[in-house]
Image: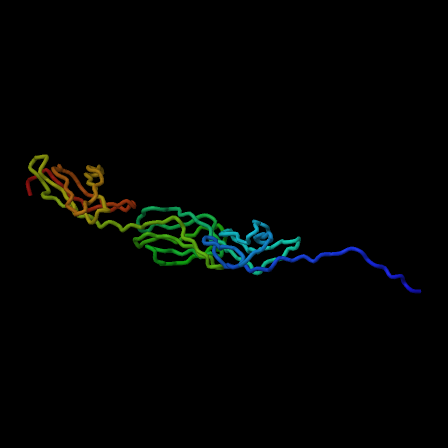
Length: 272
């Protein structure tokens, strides 16, 4: 036997698949700066951007603009029912998490600098003073653990930078702590130490060390004046016509540092 010839019917059409274009900026980049994700060409196709395999955006230009969400990005083109993965991947890397200062603003020497919040194990936390790295760089063994730089003694403005130990991305935290210099122990001067029954005529004075230090006069435990700051010329601060008593002057600053002078005793005995 022989088989009869059979003629098949029907047809098929070959269609053009999308051209493979290249992702221009592949990174890696940190998420604070991000990447301009786009192809180096396009055609009459639909382009879909994927982040870690999940579609996040679609257009017909292949240009997706600035991307700052962390992840690994790919682009797929679809045309004539055919889908083709474009060349390259773009990588946007994560930043360290922001932590919170437990103390901010002005403080005295020996104030601790402690950070709380979502600390991360693969991040180094660096101490900076007046814009200069002074160390140390601390890490935590457990995520969420407080970061404690201990007591700060040197005056200056302290900030903290967090640096990822895996990708190098870094962030400067928004808080800052300024350690002020301790005031110099003031010297309370008197033009006399006694008077002949007159309730006036004796003046007490102090020479200010700076405009950032205030002075307050006390008799015993009672303040006799408000906090008086030195002027720009650092003129002597005078309290006039004081009466008999045990006096001292306290010196302090806005950071809460405070120091007292030695006592000056004014008596009602004979004139000096």
